[in-house]
Image: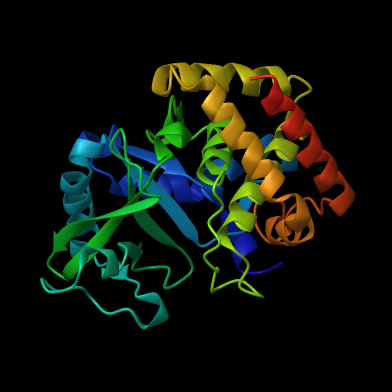
Length: 293
């Protein structure tokens, strides 16, 4: 088993919760692989997760920078270390916002085994795929990114025993689909072959749906209910537009399912060994489900 797979989602959630001041807990939602591993722990019988990255979204959007500065400085003061991948250097006042390093922090006791990355909830109406805001710390300036559909991902987030909320898989999947109606073809430099971003993200939506169907035969009804509630709250006049966007994303990845499957097997599907045929069936049935929105 790889070093990544030795990480435990429950233990990591507890570790992060211990570091978040109670006054800020309401501003924090955990998304991504850790949230997925927690949601589907009964499918695998384990909390193991194949990731080093704990994505922590800060909300509401209007307070995200203030929350990031408070939480980031607290962790730095406790000895957490910034990570600067790909030769990126600490930001200065002269560094443009979109060239600042993201605020990624590793705990002092665990070296580079895992790290927290801070993200911001997007402001309503954010049209850009990605928007950067500046965060000042004693270690320099960092960038706090917001992706335009993360409001979908964290809507009605679930409580955990650790006083942290985690995103719902259905809403994380929907956010991935909406993001890639116009596919992001930016290469992912840390994956073999540098696949385009949309292949990983839309593949993640398919993987979440595969896991949901393994978890319960009622997954379809549950996901439709959560999608409808989320869209009614965030995009009440755009139901058909959102439906068509999600279908377009699934169509975009149709010729890349083999690559998407390989990426998923090294991520959220790592404990399962899901076959490519099963992944293709999940893609088809997810398209059918979106048609019902």
